[in-house]
Length: 306
Length: 261
Image 1 (cartoon, each protein chain N blue to C red):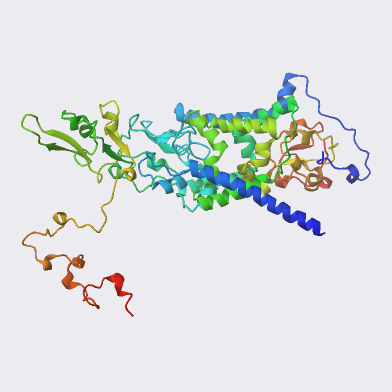
Image 2: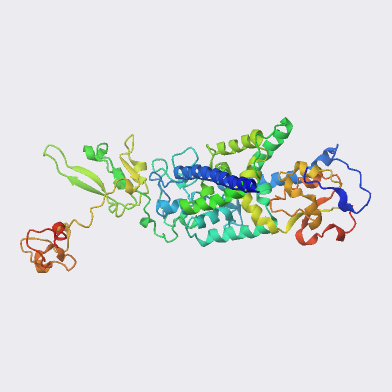
């Protein structure tokens, strides 16, 4: 793995023996190892349920509908507007000025994701459950990629979404977004839109590993750019790291675990990191954990590692 | 060095080619999918279809605000533009709530917040198929007239006298200046397939054009007592006496005039 760097930087200190991750034997240990996975699924399904329950079961909070709308735009307890900033950006680029409500909603989420990083992809997006399932099956079945594709393709698609929005006068990605289709049909009624999710499942399972989220999705690319300076980051403790490479093996964006860069910064410092936290429990040395951006320092300054 | 440069240029061109192919397919999809639909009946206050397609973020908050579940979100397999709200009057018409809850629910302004009076909404226009309308056959139906929420203005009943052996026809007539397109008439129409339907006015409405003057409808009707001086100032062009005197010989039309040296 290119992400694992040589140990020359460790200034002659005796290198620790490399231990690989061993799955815990007890159920409690397993659950603890899956803590972030469980949390992510709870968040993803919980948010879906909030939308679904508000529409179909009339869920209310403080006398107002709990969460009305869908991931494109919504209203929380009748007051707080929320809106997909990328969809709003496309609409603005298409030459249509929008109502203040949706602009405010987009600004709120813009701020949130600028602070929290690309968490939409791993913690909220319903397509993540589809692609995670495909990824898991793929690793079980040992399927190889059909072809290679640059991970920067998504940025070109992002640019093209904006160019086409301007040329065609409609939000170009929003109209074909499989994410919106999947989410909308989960909330408002199942239809043929699920075929988009099926297509992505097949792509990720049989054609290209992490094909959609890691290579193509312009929404993820947008949040990646937005989250470049995010406050919530994965802290990296270089002293305890043995470069076993287990983290990069489970990471859906393995290039973000460039440990040389991470050691310099004291954190995984890529906008493309989704803060999914797969790497945190898998690390046998506990070298990785969530931390605020300002609370981490490069290795020489860190206190005792444990 | 030169071959490196060549390689780089080739890669750039190839990348541009991929982008162009992808862009064309994408644009085609958009034209198919996001094309303004003349078939969709939109919620009250919807902007003109092209603007609506651009401004609607497809969140469905209008549909959630609708107390009658009139509005539905178009699914991928439906002929309507995907994800946008529309309604089918024969299933559930718009019941024209006086507080218009769908419009303020729209976060983007795709439903114009200026619409406060539901009778000003123009969701579509009711049109009658006289061949299957019961009233036009001579029955006393008039159900559409009775259910119309702007009864008398949007739908009125005209009587058409017939031969003495038959009673007059009492036929419904739709007036586009008052019809909101709510579709209650279509919902209530008792025929097997509705004889009155709400559709996009663009599909049926013509336009006379300003070059026709309907003298019998103008403020100063042209009668035998008509004097040219009574004509309003706006329409003097009709009177040859007031037109500027032709510069050329009589019989030379305007096409020929330019040919003179």
